[in-house]
Length: 386
Ligand code: ATP
Ligand code: MG
Image 1 (cartoon, rainbow, N blue to C red):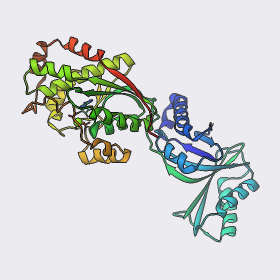
Image 2 (tube, rainbow, N blue to C red; image 1 turned 180 degrees about the vertical axis):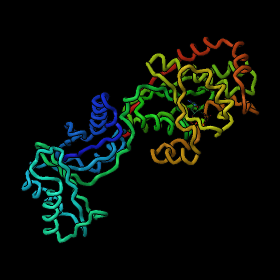
Image 3 (cartoon, rainbow, N blue to C red; image 1 turned 180 degrees about the horizontal axis):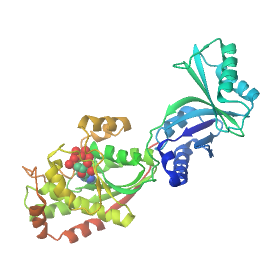
Image 4 (cartoon, protein in one colour; image 1 turned 135 degrees about the horizontal axis):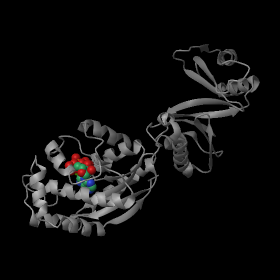
């Protein structure tokens, strides 16, 4: 079985284009690998994927729909680029189909052929009308028959399906994503994968002071995201000791902001060790008290790398729609004990300023706390769950 994969945005990348195509090709290959042997070749700005005999189109489609950079794809049959061969291929293709109206869309990629696209449309359309009795409708037919002609072959495209769009994962560089067991951070991670980032995940937990439930949730979430990206690294960070120190040595009101500032510092250490050039969080302006502009500003200043917040301007309902689409919602709503509910102050500050918080931190061994936390990180490699 053959499939033609079309890409959109990566086509605009000028001199970088070959690199994007290489990555897309590698990502398509990895996504389809569980279906058996595949051969992928380049085809006038598209990819031609050849799967072994008994692979099913629906199985391949389910996988291609999770490869970022794919705009859409179609099942394809290939024949010689002659009128007779194309007529035979088209007639064979439509023989088993039911349709009242149809349209032919021919495209000559190789302009040296003796006929124009219009000639092809007319020739092939006439043959189909005669065999099927269906009428031609070029605005909204039941069936589009699409055929592309290159110098050495003609490719008949059918069953066009949409891909997820975006850019090939790994085309944009590495980021460290702070992932909780909540709804927002998996959706934020997905948005950044879609823009071509490669993610290293960092999760903070308070075990043994709380249960290990959040860790299992995060493993499931990362596995789900690995469906879109391939295997990924998850760093489990034991955060309870550091939290206990903050509780003992710092005032209660800005505690959540302090937790967040330390999370950014630890995440930045992970980034430094792995060549990542930014951090990702699931914050959305004003969603909860730690996400007021005042608190976001105070939190942000603990980091030197850019903190990317792909959800910052989205409503909760819009975020939930993403979570439902990718299947993370079900996992995220399972109950757990988040590390931030551990030692939560009774009335957290809803608007902090950097100066007083930095003053508090001057009384702490910030570097030592970060270092001893980073030392206890456990790395796991997590693959897709299908
Ligand atoms: P989420 O739904 O992602 O948990 P939230 O609405 O609960 O977010 P906060 O608790 O303020 O919001 O967390 C803001 C962001 O901080 C999260 O989106 C995530 O990126 C990061 N974060 C929070 N808790 C953790 C954690 N335990 N481990 C890793 N990152 C975390
Ligand atoms: Mg949360």
